[in-house]
Image (tube, rainbow, N blue to C red; front, side, top):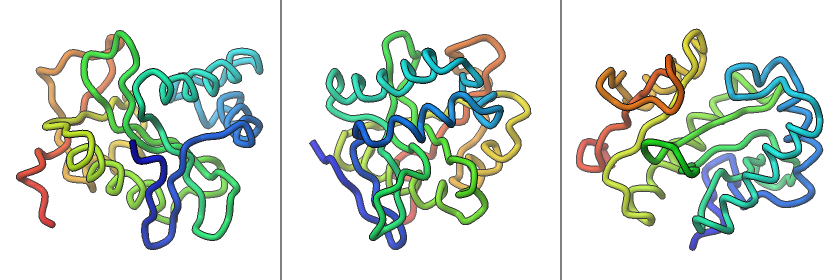
Amino acid sequence: MTQTLVTKRLTLRRPAAQDADATTAFYMSERSNMAGGHVPRPAAWRHFASMLGHWEVRGYGLWAVTRRGEDAIIGLVGPYFPDGWPEAEIGWLIFDGAEGAGYAFEAAEAARIHCYDTLGWTTAVSYIAPGNTRSIALAERLGCTLDETAIEPKPGTLVYRHPAPSEIAV
């Protein structure tokens, strides 16, 4: 399975132990309120550990996003389908200080191509908390549409459906 993707400005690599502090700090911050976070350190650490485990169980998962030529993680983006999720998701989390530069769009677009071309997905969703206007804007920029008929992983979650592989201009 593909461990690394490279875009114009980014490297998406499998998360590693070295990413624990930055990821844990994100989940402990208020910035993670809409991503299941703003939790105490032990719970934040478990969020990170579950991402590593997702790779082991599924063979894919959220990539650690870094700027090309650097190794410091600036976010997590990619395919995510934990047990109990209604559908396979393309998720994104960009850490404080890296937002607003288009990194999430660039990484999510590369992840979606990988999901369709390499993993063979025929559909994908992104689960977004109501009120997360930046994430909604990103989903819409990626061509996603609100799917009000989709099953939510948690009541009240917005489900944005990605265009099918045949609908994406290459």
